[in-house]
Amino acid sequence: MLQDTLDRGMLGLLDQSIRERLRGLCTETRNVGARQLMSPAGKPLNASLLLLDGLMGRYVSDRQGRRQMVAIQVAYDFVDLHALPLGHLDHDVESLTDVRIAVFDHDVLREALRGDFEMTMALWRLTLIDAAIHRHWGFRLGRLRALAGMANFLAEMDYRMRRAGSSQDTEFSLPLTQPDLSDACGMSPVHANRVLRELREAGICTLRDGRLAITDREGLYRTGEFKSDYLYGI
Amino acid sequence: MLQDTLDRGMLGLLDQSIRERLRGLCTETRNVGARQLMSPAGKPLNASLLLLDGLMGRYVSDRQGRRQMVAIQVAYDFVDLHALPLGHLDHDVESLTDVRIAVFDHDVLREALRGDFEMTMALWRLTLIDAAIHRHWGFRLGRLRALAGMANFLAEMDYRMRRAGSSQDTEFSLPLTQPDLSDACGMSPVHANRVLRELREAGICTLRDGRLAITDREGLYRTGEFKSDYLYGI
DNA sequence: CGCAGCCTTGAAGTAAATCAAGGATTGTGG
DNA sequence: CCACAATCCTTGATTTACTTCAAGGCTGCG
Image (cartoon, rainbow over all chains, first blue to last red):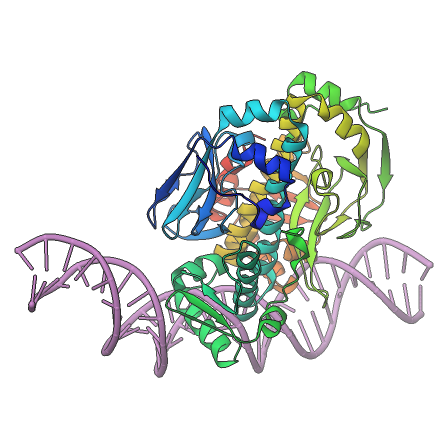
């Protein structure tokens, strides 16, 4: 059912044998269009999703429609594995692009984990890397200025997309709109536009037509104060 | 060795039987003074700490000394259980006040969990509530203005301290300095001061001599757009 | 005592939000 | 096919939020 070898991105951290056991647990794969609300905050979930292709976002929203993206998922990320121990999520999950996903039924997953301590710890670990990413988003949102924050976000995306095999080059597909970036970086869409222009004019990177061209990766990482150690070797 | 019944705060979520098994795993308890760096980012850890009394902070820092508090722990929180699956942490852990802590050796913990799926899931769940808190700090830092952000932070503290039994009243001990609050809320210390004055003059709450007096809890929660559901019933 | 850290306030400067408007693109229904 | 609505990208002008700088008072401490 699941063709992918799951050896990239975050799943690349897992042992070969765990990856194979995990593959066998996939209930089905599905395709979903862009901009779909796939799981609203508070709704009980009985399955978790592994993203195979595309981008998904996780959002905390208030009543008035202001919302903050609190995580973005790239290929080979579990999207909402947090729901396995928690039962439901505290945030919304949306597809940002057309996506391909693998579904893991919670009952199936739980039964497999019950007798498999190594796999349990491995999946636990994956969810804690999510938590580490959340922490560094907190740092970015709380302490970095708009220019540094945008650079930091783009640096993380560059790093993670490369590890996921979605990019080998200095240019890759990053189909995020400026409003998406502003949701992620805690700024207004207008300011996201100006900051992108500043990065472009500084010769660091250019985002155009859903592709990010990095002309000075060293400068991007430096401007964004990006160090990859919080990703635990993803 | 461990006298506490562990039935409050986040640990109150655990089943009675799990709490008792957990108590038996405590290696030792210790007292540590205020403002101690207890575990620096990157250092391999072979034990995790449960906070019994006091407050601890978790920080992401850059080179220049700018730092963002990314979590605060109150009584009966695990402080760094993330280190069990991860091996080391991506952030610093410091005591904010004098603290009393229970130590859980990772080898002991891991052996106990190996044959105890329920307890494993329960502890996993606790670490994911940490992650949910991180997400809502991201929302606060990215989307709320200074006044709302401070109110949101204080509302969360009020809520969690009450659940931890550290407060039954509209006034309780919150021994955080204004620089601490500014680290947590992503603003300058000067601005933290002004925002606290604004909350005081609005008749919402007063922080003085390490005690928070809440005169209008409804107003505090409303100003901070605080809803407690992301705490999963802590 | 003298130092350090904290709390407080005013004044000045900077960063970012908001308001406003025009152009480009895409999808939609007539 | 075209009118249109919606969304996005872009830029300028204005306003607001916040930082930084500066200074004084307070407390606790070696």
